[in-house]
Image (cartoon, rainbow, N blue to C red; front, side, top):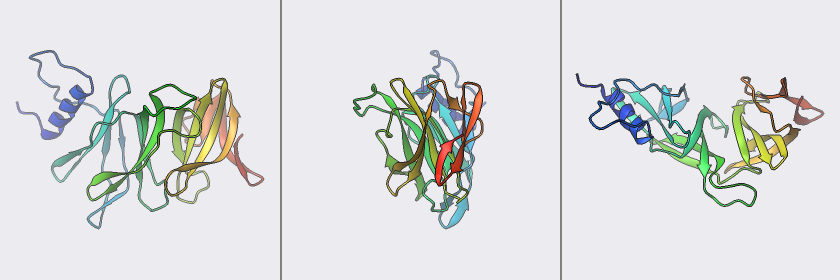
Length: 218
């Protein structure tokens, strides 16, 4: 039985990402994505909200995104990615694809490869890089996106670590990258919460709060 094109593409890419098939094995008839995102894009002057499927290798060192449209399937190149999410981070009214990436750029304070962030926009029916950062201010542990001030533009909220120092940092888009607008010291045991503007630290949830003109975790 012939596989649908969408399943065949996903199966081939899954093998490329290290899923592996023994010699003579048939590709799986269904490969489930790790997550599905729903970006708000524009294509040929029409709104486009695809079901953007995210596929990650088992070791979270590589991945790609893909979606079906009008009976055809678009699939990205393979990225050295460990995470993908979407939100409008630059305030243009459309969502960007924000990738957690592995970078081999040399840094004095972390090993190679290390974690960083790329920002991609959808234009002319393809992904176009807006920012391919080699690193943030401090070594990145994890990140999420949240519109903390309700203005429609999402901020990048990161947990960062430098040796025995860890912090939560709020980054805003500055036109060609991110700048740190706020930070709060954290235990290095902290991790992201299920709520996008919060972290869990030593069993307690701490959330981004605006106090006396400044953002901090409380």
